[in-house]
Image 1 (cartoon, rainbow, N blue to C red):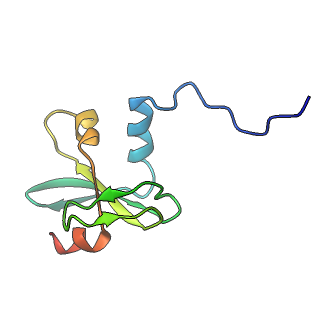
Image 2: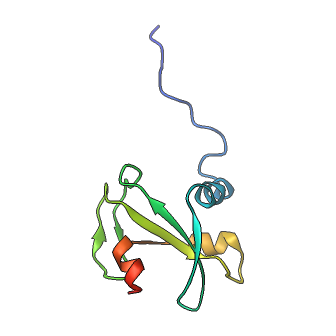
Length: 98
């Protein structure tokens, strides 16, 4: 019988808690702008596999384009709620504060 070389999915994949811990690790930093604290995490071009609409310019961020993911660091509803409201920005749009 042929061998299956594909990695098996872990039981905790897709879990909201694991999404939170995955996003909160890495090169995440906290920035103060727009009247609050924001978690900012860069996404490399290799990791960008889906298309998103940038809230700053409304131009789509194509797969394979490096960009930033931002979410509130000081929200009153907790980390899980803030993470669910995260947005993907072009790096330039986030820097100019659009």
